[in-house]
View 1 (spheres, rainbow, N blue to C red):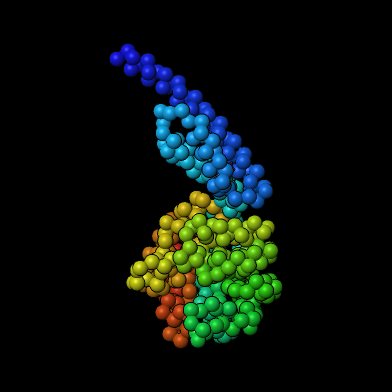
View 2: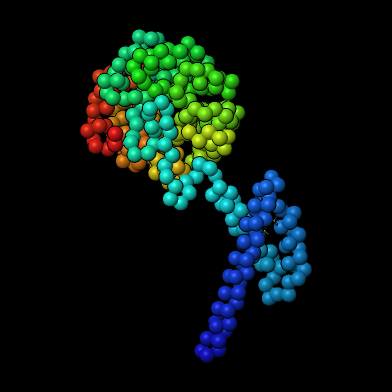
Length: 356
Ligand SMILES: O=C(O)C(=O)C[C@]1(C(=O)O)C=C[C@@H](O)C=C1
């Protein structure tokens, strides 16, 4: 018994020396990671690992076998690599540092993010002045200041309505001017950033283009607010890194928007990932919105989904509205008519979840 105690005492001493050595090693590994980052070198270096393993095996006197030594050190290399990676992750510009305030994105006199929550509404596609004016009047009546409307429409089928292009953007500008609104429209071509600056207030990068890196870089070169939609199969890591593309080019005015992801479920158009809201709020300092129309693809559950999003901490909601959804040129089934939009706004406001 006494011998056991003595041996355990010796083991405790070795453990504490090992701990010190492991952490000393970890600190060196971190520094190596920084140097590699500066030199643009890959973190993982199998040749260096093999060389170290060969040297260790040559010096090994047991009782551990050579294979056991290799296994143990391979574990150490793996966690060391993780240390270099997580160090890099912490450096992402979009990542929330401890105690960091929320980013507030400003377009004209509207602030997205921060203490207030924002309702954004409008037709899926800009179709005509009459359509846009009817929607804008309805938004104004409901106190909604931000109008969305697609002019460049990336559609699944090439035979579907592709949008009015520049003419549609011009309509947005005119109608927004008449009703005192702020506009959002999707840009799909890096060469169209100047068009965006000319006609609209906020650039949208759509789900299908979330990893269109040239488009992200071009948006990063502008100084306009950008609403970035989550890709249909994008992980949150990929989503955050897509935002980093924009912010790393000097444009910090980025808003994230969860719009549903592709799963096996067919009763909704996409699956609204509510967990994305608190995770993105926690992991980044950017405003996070939820597009209840695209995520669900059905009108009957918009109110509870909007409430869930707000309760989860979303900075706002995007919803589609059209004066006559049945004849809409895109997404006819999911757009609210003007009466339904009014009821939707009333229900969301009455829930007390929307902080004005
Ligand atoms: O020596 C390096 O280049 C390191 O990055 C350190 C280290 C290690 O832990 O020893 C870590 C990862 C590499 O795959 C190789 C080695």
